Amino acid sequence: MSRRFAVWWLLVAALAAGGCSSFDRSRLPDSLAPATPEISQKHATIVEAERVQLTRDYLAIHNPKLAEGLSAANEAATIRFDPRVIVVHYTAIPTLAGTLDAFRSTTIGSYRQTIRQNGRLNVGIHYVVDRDGSIYRLYPDDLIARHVIGLNHVAIGIENVGDGDLDERGAEAPLTEAQLEANRQLVRYLKTRYPGLEYLVGHSEYRQFEKPRHPGHHLFYEERPEYRTEKVDPGRKFLRRLRRLLRRDRP
Ligand SMILES: [Zn+2]
Image (tube, rainbow, N blue to C red):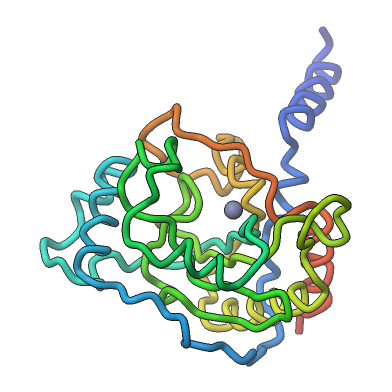
């Protein structure tokens, strides 16, 4: 085949494989106008020694090199990280009370088989956004929480209380406009606080980081190749609108 044809074919193949263009959308603007949303500490998770130890055990399974480098002290400071990515979720639970219940325990429930087989640490999250847009900080921004395979060591997580995309038919509690606005303010606040944040992805998009062609690939690490999940949260419409708002928020 001619050289020009070969180049064209490679381009088509790259786009068909997931496309760099979709990944580029997940890049945050270099800077965003600052924001100071109200953030409640009312439901903050107590990061006690057991939770720290379980986090270290989790890392020993899933990111052993990182775990080896941690200090021997069993203190929260040993699971600190440098935020590079924001991952947006929805809880698949329609109420704040139900959401807080799910995050309360230090260990994972026995009903979550796949997750439990991969470490006893419960899922955890940095922020929860209630349906009326109220923002709660559960974890300190820079402590590793378990919310996304392969990226926990670089990612701040935002959970939105709900079980469907904006206006999603059939959902009991589709995400709301108030949550969209709260996510926008929270992302602006975080980007100002941590200029090293480079990406904003939906949980549904985390596997994009695995593709070696992509520039974010070096951020993804998961020791077990079989440990992957398929996610749909927080929904395409929510992500598209959030990204559009953030592009407008460039200073
Ligand atoms: Zn999720």
